Image 1 (cartoon, rainbow, N blue to C red):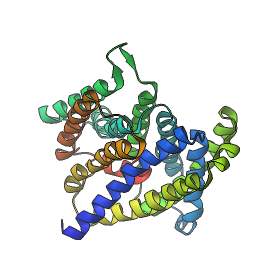
Image 2 (tube, rainbow, N blue to C red):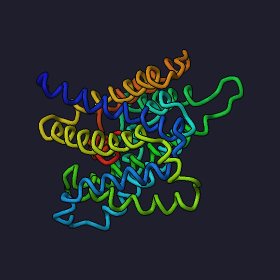
Image 3 (tube, helix red, strand yellow):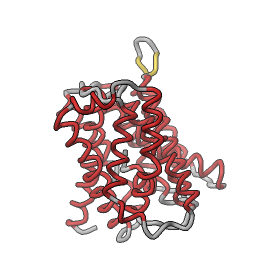
Length: 300
């Protein structure tokens, strides 16, 4: 990989990591209801990417189903999780989509794994368990359960997207945005209160955060990463995307003043080490399932 493309990939991973921190600030510090913020994000994506709705994809029914897993379902769980868990831990737990995709390939597509990937899966889960469990009370973080569920749902969507007819990154984003914002607004109206008032009272920073999620993450992040996918093998790109959770942890400590604990450091090292092992020996049946999930959800 040449230096210019490495800088581009590093910038994309930085934007994805920063997005976790920004979203945590919006749904926790600014107290914007998470489902409403997810709906506003997808509405912005749909409006900005209207030209990419054409030509209409052939397999629109499958894309509608994918929109639930990668779009509304994934982001509803993710944003609710971020409202109840620190961004640093969420950045690591969100990477569970990689071992989840591998396990689903085994269960439904006949993928076989060797001892190295098996070890990677066990390490990934063990590290997350170390981060999520409070050793004093043996209770599990409520928010991180949602983050883990979001990773699972996103992995399902990634596998479904891999099996449908190819569409460009921005075209898939346009349709996912179109299919996702209305259901999220409906669910928000049923479960949340004071959405519009909270969003408006958040002021310019919340509006800037929304613009960043739409333009920075969905357009720049996806466009840049899709450009790299066309030039380089997945086996090279996938391990390097682990810069995303590292940036997420660093930025959450710097910008949100989150505490860095030995438990977080050790759990992150174990979990991301396991994810790296899996990424270095990718699925044979769906070699880019984890990367496709990133294209659908913006790396979360």
